[in-house]
Amino acid sequence: MERLRFAVIGCGGRGSGVAEMIAAVTNAQLVAVCDVVEQNARAVGERLGVPFFTKTEAMYEAVDVDAVFIATPVEHHFALAKEAVLKGKHVILEKIMTTTAQEAYELAELARQKKICGALSYQLRFYDVYRKWWAVGQSLEPTLIISSRHPGIMPPNYLRPDPWAGVVDFLSHDIDLVYWVAGREPSLVTAIGYRSTVVVQDTWDTMTILLDFGSMTGLVYSAMAGGGLPSTHAVIGRKGNVRIESDSLSVHRFVRTNADRYERQWERLDTEPVKEDTTGLLVQHFSDWVQGIVKDPFPLSTFEDGYKVMLIHDGIAESLKARQTISLEHIHQRIALSQGG
Ligand SMILES: NC(=O)c1ccc[n+]([C@@H]2O[C@H](COP(=O)([O-])OP(=O)(O)OC[C@H]3O[C@@H](n4cnc5c(N)ncnc54)[C@H](O)[C@@H]3O)[C@@H](O)[C@H]2O)c1
Image 1 (cartoon, rainbow, N blue to C red):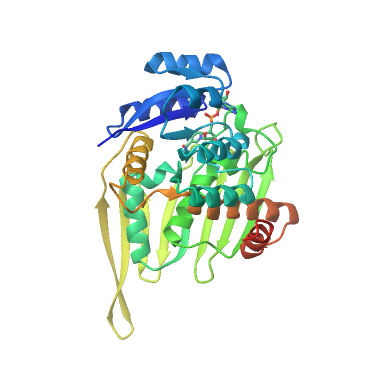
Image 2: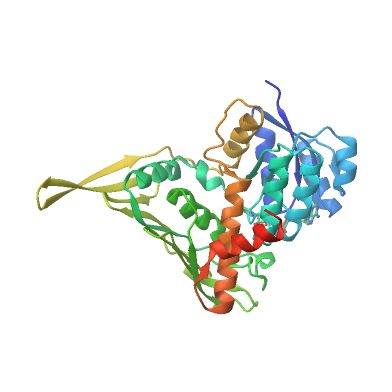
């Protein structure tokens, strides 16, 4: 088996860690890095012994690259991913996929036409505990899916006024998790958020999002001032509930014992503790998918999944602006019409 030749674009906080993880994966190899700030590119390139560039065109000219991992700030994702797809490169894109669902739609369409594998770096899907949570949650026939984490005060580069910045950027993982467990996209989104409750910068730092799936609800919430509070990942379903507790799952099942009696049965399911970031596992799986070694991208978030999550992000931005519930079907129709789809 050939090792997939990866370049990392964007060598900041996230990209430098990703480059190291790719270098450690067995079915991929790091062949180049690129960052518009030369010292960032140089630092990672020299540390990992690969050529570094400040321009993607120069990198594509000089190095044979099969795939790119894009870890720049979100406003550059669309242009860099589009360039890569047009050059026939497979793409892993950091969250948030793009600044708008329209860009995500265009990117997913382009990748489909060019037969390019595109995925999002939603690496929580690769923790054993989240995989088992997904499986048990689905088996319980969900009516309410809750995903909540609190980042504490985020680094200054995230404290921006844009609709995708602040705690919304952090919550993108949780939105994806709820979408993943639900197995389909919601029809309605309602978001209630506050800016600058704890930080002085003008940014969303407190956010609650309700996703209406018709017969089930998603609840996603986060606050920078909630740093230190425990995360909550729970599914309540028609057959019981499951909650993540550290590296294990606490499961309560309601079993009907006779006509009008139910017995609650409890079990703890242990999962494989994974202490380090699972992005290496994500890259490994992506490389197998690109090379046809696995046919099913699951549990990867593909560009099609990323577009569905971006629809939710657009819905959140519209809901916060209008202080109303937003129909995602309307947003999708608008985009599909504008793209001639
Ligand atoms: N999946 C995760 O858990 C996770 C964690 C952290 C960050 N992220 C995501 O990773 C991305 C980067 O975040 P970060 O914290 O590393 O930001 P950062 O600001 O620390 O790093 C971004 C880097 O990209 C470079 N850059 C900017 N424009 C570029 C361009 N056009 N071409 C090449 N390089 C360019 C910058 O010079 C900088 O070095 C964001 O989308 C963020 O949401 C994801």
